[in-house]
Length: 152
Image (cartoon, rainbow, N blue to C red; front, side, top):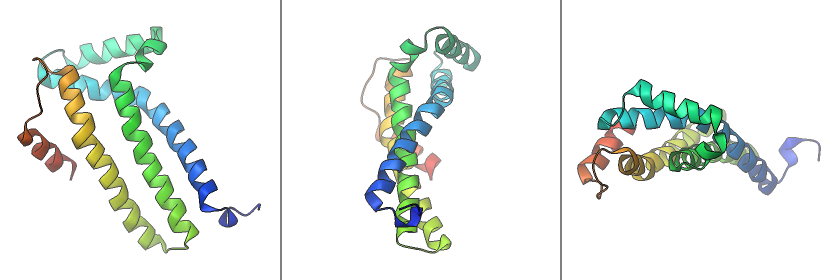
């Protein structure tokens, strides 16, 4: 079974899962501080620079602590799931010998659905609760509408 076209879909998905976890983990160290900084800045809690500086300092001096922060887990989950959707779609379409055009179409909508829904219905509300400048409450429906508009 040296030819990757002959690999069963289950083995392809296993490799996709591992690659998605690795990519999600690697990117989280860069994206989580930026997302947190934007959210903190918008809430008035900290300036963009102050937030990025604090995150960067913790990443460099205590990465084990930063790894356990809620925003790290949230961003890791979003990006690992997004990459899994992309990789699994590629594998599925390749296994079924779909055209590049069909694969691109399916991949676009799959990734948009996974990433968009995770961002709007999970990441954004959690970040608003974590980094908001007032006590956590339920997220208003208008916020969901605005997040959906932003991500589509």
